[in-house]
Image 1 (cartoon, one colour):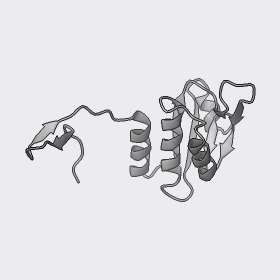
Image 2 (spheres, one colour; image 1 turned 180 degrees about the horizontal axis):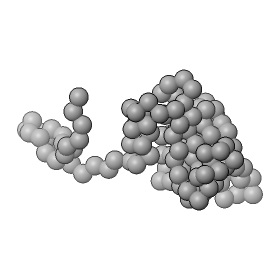
Image 3 (cartoon, rainbow, N blue to C red; image 1 turned 135 degrees about the vertical axis):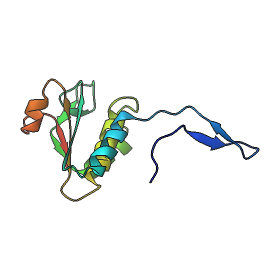
Length: 124
């Protein structure tokens, strides 16, 4: 198996040319956790919980959701593509990669509480 290198594509002449690429830290972290056979993935961010209806009077912090619920919230557009959505999608990817895996999205400030199950959003 080969990892890394410069991202390339074939141009119209069949030659390789380099292209700019971004590696998303959340997806990369989830993949690494999967490859080392971790049981838990903690994605630490600036908020204590994942929330639906964020920034509205109907905002609701989520403490524990299933993979299916998380997928449904993503399909509903509940999470911004530039902020929470990649975190939730990475958590889904990890949690569904093997039975018994759990992903937690929590604030860095409350990471110790999240490890004790007292803060953060668990995706199971």
